[in-house]
Image (cartoon, rainbow, N blue to C red; front, side):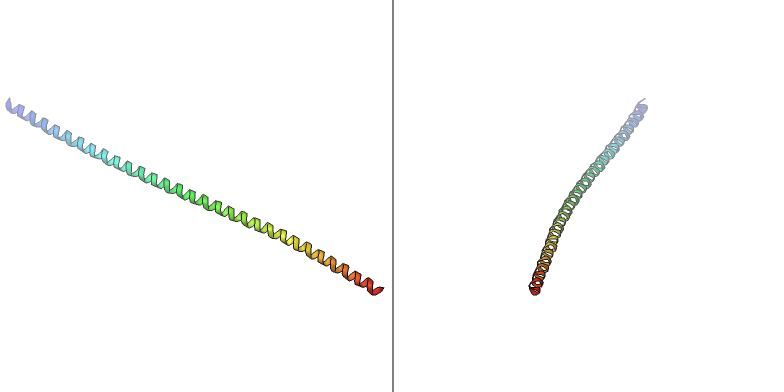
Length: 110
């Protein structure tokens, strides 16, 4: 009977050791998974942050380009206005020359 009890105790100890080993392995797997998840979350956060920064930079660049375009449009508008003024001044000068020539012609005829 003592031998049987000894065998049962031995089997129980073995089963307990195997169970503890299984639990420890599962705990280790869980820890590994938590670490992987944590790493993935950090990586995802960093990627997201980088993407946000990239988008902010691109938005700023687009805004700057838009401002440059607006500035160029304003300059073109100013140049067009100046060109119109030059054309008007040329027309006025031509009219003045024409009048002067007509007046000289009138004086020569008299």
